[in-house]
Image (cartoon, rainbow, N blue to C red; front, side):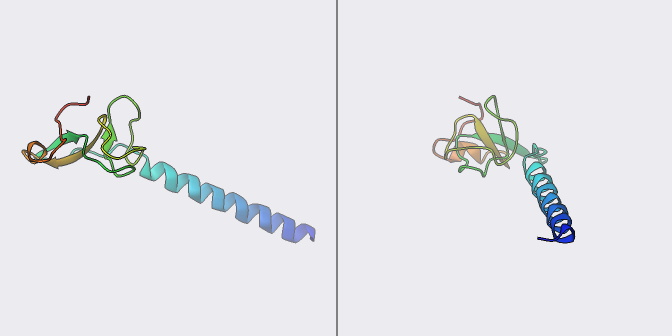
Length: 90
């Protein structure tokens, strides 16, 4: 491989890694709580949570369905209507 191709490959690889890191960090941020909402623990699917208490602190990091420490924001009053939903982490 020529030196020019090696440099180009290295630059493209670095750009790809940089873009992947930026995308990963953008999705792993806490989600701001919407107005008129409440935290509902124990109802999120894996990687579909808004945040959590204790184990991790960022959106999309739940590793299992119905994790009792992970929550999603729901309109006030909705959590009490969902089986397994709780307003407090367990």
